[in-house]
Amino acid sequence: MKFLIQVVKNASVDVNEKTVGKIGRGLLVLVGVCDSDTTETADKMIKKTANLRIFEDENGKTNLSVKDISGSMLVISQFTLYADCRKGNRPSFIKAGDPDHANALYEYITDEFERSYDIHVEKGIFGADMQVSLINDGPFTVMLDSAELQF
Image (cartoon, rainbow, N blue to C red; front, side, top):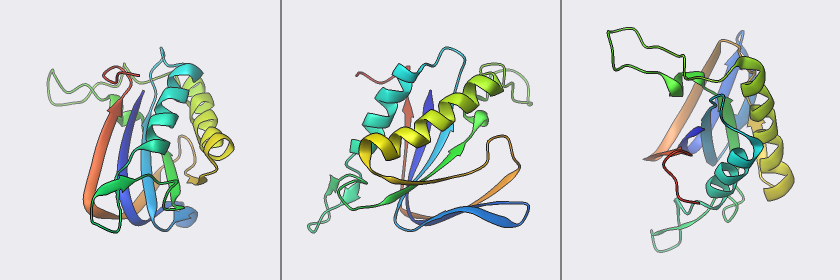
């Protein structure tokens, strides 16, 4: 599982020229799922993301989490995080999860941020052609890959 996390001043997602999700200060999280991912993997990624200290405190140090600042999250499913560009010039997406499996985990992730961490979550529409707008604050962007993290 991969989460591309961006600290934002605001972010929104539109589908068919209609805004379906919008937040102020918080995190834009792009979520990539592969077939071997489970709810246990998701729980670890959710916990790590909710507790990441990537917001500045009163001294300008990154000591605060999205929870600490009462921030929101915009969570978008993003299968292209599993693009394989090693061969040729056209990315391969064979490592991306089956859509039914990925959608179930995506829904689980968005629900769990709210249920377990009391973080307000807005989201895109799984599988839709989405236009995502954001103002990246910093800019501050990090990638979490469950295959590389030590939990």
